[in-house]
Image 1 (cartoon, rainbow, N blue to C red):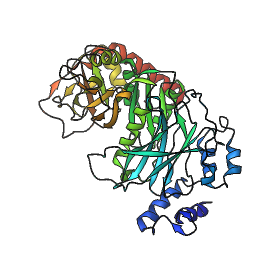
Image 2 (cartoon, rainbow, N blue to C red; image 1 turned 135 degrees about the vertical axis):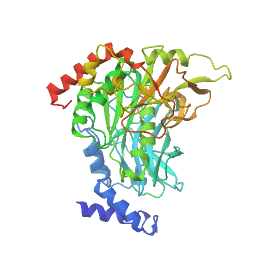
Image 3 (cartoon, rainbow, N blue to C red; image 1 turned 30 degrees about the vertical axis):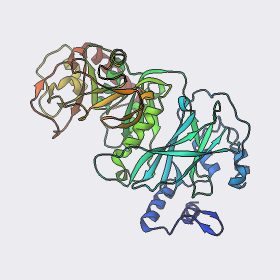
Image 4 (cartoon, rainbow, N blue to C red; image 1 turned 90 degrees about the vertical axis):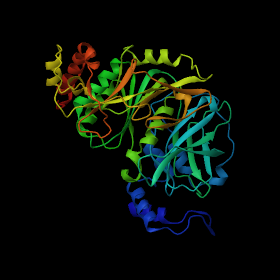
Length: 469
């Protein structure tokens, strides 16, 4: 099977017998194609559908398989549209090949635009190509062809990489709701991908928290549970994790939270080596996470596991966001669409705090570092290692520490340290930790409420799953 796939992929893609579309393939491209083959991203359309989609939900795969020999151009005709908006289902996504070095991941329906937003990975530098979207109302539906509009997502500001990300926006006829979508370029003669379209709808969240891709370097179960229970206490309803290579102990913890409806894990098996895109595709996963919450979450917070936004004037970050984002911008008529929390580093590599509190012994026993280290750096200026809470409908493009571009009429609110600060706990010295250092006991004031919850959860995970704590 693998040899057959390799031969099919390296052969030039043709529009017809006499017109090759792709030029001679270089050594680097052959290497990339080998990676693609190894990851089975060159399956036929019918095989890809059967692999990605739950068979019990989609019974028409056999119909599509029988008809896959029909020519592609002949299949593009307008069939009867279904004008019933589908209910929200569990999020479905997967990396699939579009072109030799272009991959698609997810498809998100945007009600306000009557459009489907598909996340894509593209080579850098990227020579623009024409994208075509095929809207399908069922797997056996022949398809409706529309022209896609490509939008680049800003590149990382930390190094040069071979790949970056973007969106292909696919307009949808008004009051029609396709169940699936395929994306191709004008140089491809057949479909190589099919994605279920993800729709908004209940249940709704007040606050969703998005994390970058989890990989083998992160194994600290105690820090993970502390982060999850702390953020739940501060108002987070849902946590979304992207799974590149989650270590076994961490995976068990996340799966338990997922069974309880608190965590959602999305597959993030990159179609090329992770060193060829910034930080395991962080810019791509950020955008996927935020836009997947359109019509699903009121607010979305983007931050790492070792970062905790600690409120000072409100226990609930949702209440804090409601208050701050509903204030008027005195300098313009714009409405606030995001909060920026300023960063400060807490050193977890020095001495533990001398501050005494009733739950300190438990915190030490269960290695709850956020309660044990109170030495912090100078507060960084806005945008410097800051993290943001956003209204999904307000942002057009994101960056790691800021909103790159708002939609018209929206602007940023920089949160005063009197209201909240983002604590960044570091196990090793960070050269960006600025003097003067000082003691900050703000987080400890939540210890009587949080530490018993974290302890209970860790003991439960230990007894039920054998987690080492």
